[in-house]
Image (cartoon, rainbow, N blue to C red):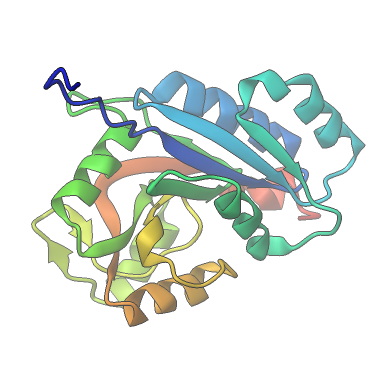
Length: 212
């Protein structure tokens, strides 16, 4: 028997954050995600053997997360693969744990707008958020990145709130450069959202975390 009514499609997006100390950044990012993300999502933390303070904070706040994956050694950027393997959404986010998305606009929150871009540009395997500092913009300008439909800078990017299409990533995640190359080899394009911004707390490392 069928009622003729289709079941709603679950489009919850998995957000995978890679942590290694810098607890103040992690706290600010989690608060920023909670305050500024309206699209359905769940947060997976992959901890790259942080110190006792960060790990205790994660334990104390585990109810805020979908899951926490405790690495036994620091796998650096490749640690993202632990979270990718443990999640299932077709569109997922990977990011270092040092970014704060800007507040929602009339067009929706940062994640709503990234999902919309991915829906309208199925040929893109990765679309990252844009830093509001000059670093990323200079990268794109240096490469003379073309702007697609006025909304995507077609260029490679770092690990900054990147929306990735799961079917497009056909190798284990090892790093941003290798991933961008692999997506291109698989026939997908890579870009940065022209108007979806986030603040990169890591720019403050020389003052706040000179040891990092």
